[in-house]
Length: 452
Image (cartoon, rainbow, N blue to C red):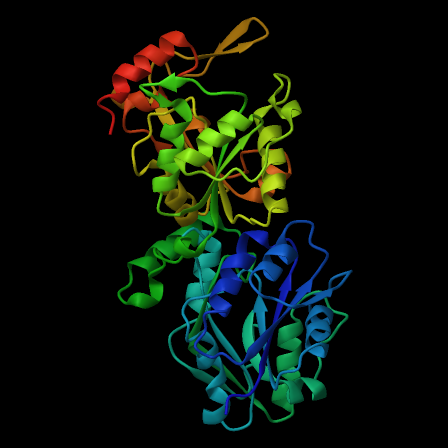
C-alpha cells in the first residue's frame, strides 16, 4: 500500500519556474499525493499557474520565514509523508518521488531524505561549482553530519510533529532541524537518484575567476556527474503562445493576405501551442481564423493609435489572452510586416531562450558599416572604425518584429525585453526586409515567389 504524500511547495513570484516544476510533479510514477502551495503573496501568476495544473490547496503567508512557511503548509497536509520542494526545483524524471520514499523502508530509523540538486546548463559558475561539489552520486546515511537541504526532501509527518521547523530564523532552518533529529537518534539519508534541476546556488562566494576555473576542471572530468549541458526545462511541455498584433485591415501581397505568412510560420513552429492574432478589426480577425489562428477577442481600438507604443499593445493583448484562460509560459511576439522567416526560426528562438536561460531572445543581424546614434542633432559613432572586418566586432541590430521570445511577466510590466537578452544571428539578409508600403508590397511579391 502506498501511503498518501503531501508535497509542500514554497513560492514567491516563481511564475518562471512553477509550471515546469508542477508538470513534472504531476507526471510521477508515484500517484498517491496531494500538492500544497505556500505562497508569499506573489504579485505574478504563480498562484494562477498552480491552479491551472491542478493544485487545490493554496496557503498564503506574509511575512515570510522559511520554517514558518513550511510549518504552515504541513499543518494543511493530510499525508503520512511530507515532501518539501522549492518552486524553482524541477524533478528530472518520473522516479524522483519514488527514489525519495524508498529509503524509509530500506534505512532503519530514517527521519528524512534529501535528494540531488543539479545545476541547469545556464546556471552561474558559482552555482555549478557548489552543486556539482556537494551533491554527488553516492548514497549517504548520516548519523552525525547535519547537512540537510529541504529544497528537495521528504520526512514523515510524525517526525515533524515532534520536531517542527524553527519559525524565527531567516536561514538554515533545515540544518537546525537536522541537528535536532540526529541528536534524538534518527538518521538522515542523501539519495542521489532523487534528482532535481535547481537554478539557484547554495553559497555566496564571489571569486568569479577562481570559480570559473574550478567549473572548467569539473566539467572536463569523465562521467555523467559533471555533465550539465542538457539540464534545462522541457520545452515540449511549455505553454508557448505566439501573439501577432495587427491594427486595422491587411493588404494582399503575392496573392495572399499579408497576415498569412506570419500565421503560417507561427503555426508550423513545433513548440508554439497557441497562435493568437490580437486585432481591432473584424475583417482581419476573420482572415486570421481562416489562416488557422485564434482570435478570442477584438482589442480596444485605442491601442492602435500612433502614440501607443508596441509594448503597451502587447501588455493589453496578454491581459486579454490570460482573461480567456490561456496562461503562457513564454510569449513570442511576431509582426506581419516582416514576412521573410525561415521555417525553423521561431523554434530556434525558443530553444535559444530555454537552453541559455535568457529573459528575452530576438534575431539580430551584424552590421559592419559605419554606424551612429543621433542624439538631438549630434551624432555619436558606435562602430569600431575602418580596420579590416575580421578584426572588428559588428554592431548587432535586433529585429524584434521577426519574432521576439520573452517571459510574460515582463510584458505585464509593460516591457518586451528582460534584463538578460540573447541574440540569434540571422542567416539570410532577406529576413530584414520590412513590408509596409506599395513599393515594399511589390518587392515582397517578387521575393515570395521563391521564398521557402
